[in-house]
Image 1: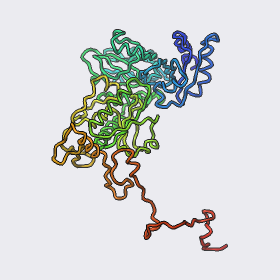
Image 2 (image 1 turned 180 degrees about the vertical axis):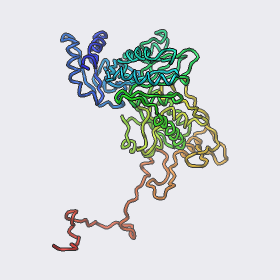
Image 3 (image 1 turned 60 degrees about the horizontal axis):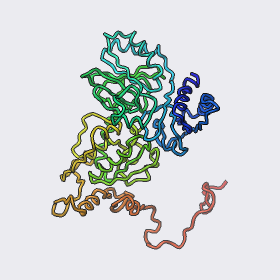
Image 4 (image 1 turned 120 degrees about the vertical axis):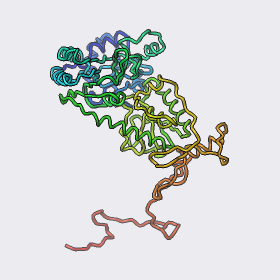
Length: 490
């Protein structure tokens, strides 16, 4: 596929010229950065020499590459961002954006052949979802599949792609009812149900009145990536099959993906026993992230725990190891980067939805899983429940634990500052349950944690409290120091 078609040079130029943008940021993921020079040259030729449009290439985004990097674009005072490659279509906060999905290779004939054979033996109504990079071929697949599979045999619902243009001003007007009903061209990816309308990961589809997603089987056309994991967790009550275009095979066993739910439930139980909680800012551009951070702070403080807000770009085990006082981290990011495989991390990393389950006493998981943090904001205001005074049972510790420190008379003064101080001191205790632990004493805050932390190394002078005036080292090579005796001579 040629450069003009794959990178939509003509549509991009039309978007820039129609809105009179003069400073345009071109955001490329790592795998497409090698094409950036050719894309810029083609785009300049299409814009014409008379138009003074500045094109700036952005790479190595601070956060997930699927989101529009408004922070990087602000460094060059860009008017808009052209986003290339895989995207989650999360709404931006300030800058308009045009998303170029790309056109991944797929054999329409082979895809239709395998899917039609499957549907002849499986007659359940089906919703067809797909990666945005395959959107260019969906109309052909839909037409051929409808012809190959009689409508009386199986009901097929194909999702549509949301508009590739993200305009925060229009999104704000639409959310306030200023633009009328939700049309076919919208950049608001909610992932929630509005009557019979669903949207997730840049796709939108309608179901007949009275029908629910659990009544349908899901067919995913695309790779096993973060977008597919988002589908599996959000609609975990549906039967799911996947067509892998790269391998040209139909995968009907997605049990490995659904096992993620068990792992996430375990992390929720881990989070319940946490004393210090770190809030990881995983985006500075997705609309509503600041509101979500404030809600998480209120939730954590309402549970009597200590909260720290950390901005560090893409988290990894080495970065988070610098904050060993945090027992758990909450990652506020877009839905497709929210699930971090924290097996290599010192502390688990959970999502805002999992934090609601962990820190709201009495909350129970019904099986519904919300990946998009904006859905938590839009559904209902966060209600921090008053935590009961009785001890709670910890499944991991195998006993009852107390989250709040009570007064000596057994009554908790919720209005007094002393009660809050006692509660804070209680939940921030770091007990030395392991005699060989490196952490000693009690820390009341993250700063005191580092001040009071002590390390015990090799004691060279056990019989004397005073050190020697000097230490004699060794000289020579490691293969044979000068003070070592040669056991054999040649």
